Image (cartoon, rainbow, N blue to C red; front, top):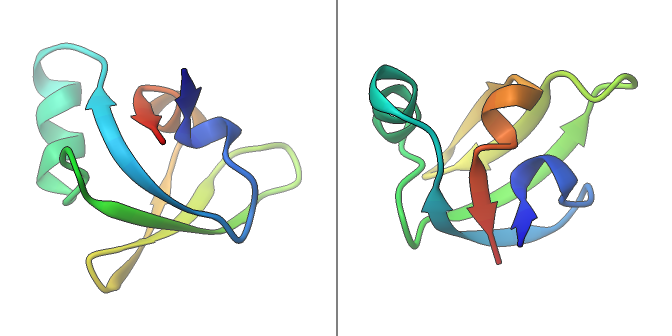
Length: 73
């Protein structure tokens, strides 16, 4: 299992599954990160937080805790 947090910069991956519960999972889905969505990893901050991605045509910054809940392929 690979998560969005572990994905290398410059990679385009597809969301396989969202882990997490309740409000956190809903917030991630509301940002457009749903099953089957393509995500391009733009850059990662030096300490790994935040992760900048491009999803559905817009740029998004995710905390590493949230990025680790998104399983990708």
